[in-house]
Image (cartoon, rainbow, N blue to C red; front, side):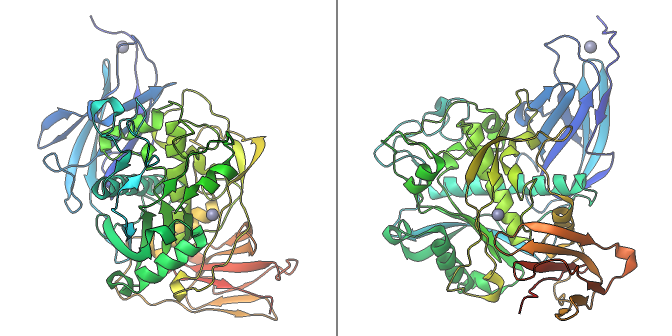
Length: 513
Ligand SMILES: [Zn+2]
Ligand SMILES: [Zn+2]
């Protein structure tokens, strides 16, 4: 029987012959009408004319006339970083279909990100997703990050170093896709960062017992110092995203599950990015997928977290999916800091990093989340190198105030000023040479002037205490602005200036002394 409903399928984030420079691709679109409930959106991909159904492994999320499909470019069933392929896609629903091609061309850039899994001295490299004594389940039923049998783990509640590396690799690729998607939405094309290699194990000289006593600032300083002085530290074009293996959650027995108390019970933990290093604990890996086909399940796993056994940071959702979205959102935010972003009231660099799940799924329920407050910035002491000098700290305090939902989008976005900095940042563009020099950015304090040898693209006024951007000035690329007079009505003892040129040179300028 032929269906008479006039279905129309439309893509919203891709056009035919799009060039994609990241391995994971989000395919988003709209479906005008549905008919019978057993009809599904299907994705077929083909290379050399052989169509292959891929919707099962890629999980189609469809509701309210919208669909999203997460796809991975593969060569002969295996993921690879360096191939170039052209895939033909057919998205179909009932009698309707739409055909389009994508050209996968992995991005090349001498400016790269290296992921690390840090193993402290005296530690076996396993990550404790639960306490040492607990055993059994590591992930909730629906998620299935580990050990096939319906979420039943192998016994001791910890994952191996190679599992941790698989989790890191998968999720860094997901963030690569996310950055490209968000910059594309902001009108800058699919710019994203390049990964230098798969996740490497970094063996630290810091003793595990010592690591469990240190604050996140102390851990950041310690590991930044070690990395910069290691064989990996020679190339200033490489920045690092590192996860600490020995993060430990001491169970809460007094029933106080406030975030302050939860944070006190997570040892060897960090969520801190600046300069050349973004550092995190591994305490939320229990909610993270290690396999591509589990990603959407993990974003949709609404099973409640057992707060006595697992560290929770989910902005009060207290579900596996909430923990995954918030903790990966925090990684996205801190990586933003190593790309020189400050804080904003809205979006990823402010209140909005808990919503990361919505980028990849279609929200059927509307979650209402309280706003985050961005806490004061602290300066680390004992700074190992100039390129590791900027550090921002977020204190996850909360207001019982409900977030205003952004209509239309997925509530996860970079504000305009952040998108500009990312788009012009050398780590996210595709026109950087190996031996690029920095432009000279100078200041004239008396006249509040900023001068640069390359045209200025953006100037921000940032509050020094919390890095919050209070104002910004964007310059059209064609206007070649080499000099800018700052507003006079700003208290420069409490604010500093951030400038980025069109060649990607950035500088912080202080006008108070
Ligand atoms: Zn139909
Ligand atoms: Zn921050």
